[in-house]
Length: 169
Image (cartoon, helix red, strand yellow):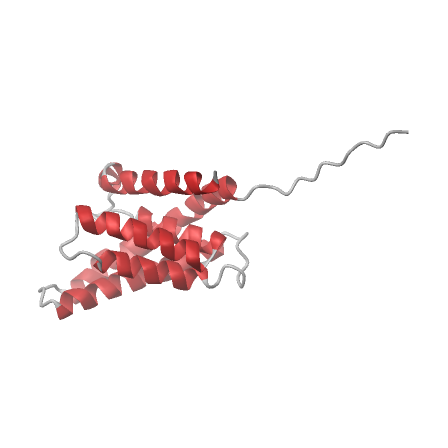
């Protein structure tokens, strides 16, 4: 059942990312909801789940929008895996944790994309890209991650309930 819920959340986040979030752009920059979802799941479930969700979302994104198959999938895979390595080492009940991890992951995602553009001889203005797009996207994703993390942790974390039998006298 939890696998089904994770699949639905991943599919809905991808659907929202590719359709509705285009209308919520700030200065032409839209949030990367898929990256936020990967960070949230990897912090809550670990590196294997984070890497798996990252590669699934990345391949979906590459199949529909990418120029080269596997580039986004590889970036999302590494981000999900490395951020999931900290799920037992950081305090995840605070709002600062997803904020910081999402900000760092957004910076790394854009850095890896710029490296890919550089090595594939794609001409881009790196300074303009970082000063106008990456800063806004980092803040946008980090703030969004606070709310998304609370929603996902509420969906995924089930309370440990122990029911005791009533003793008969």
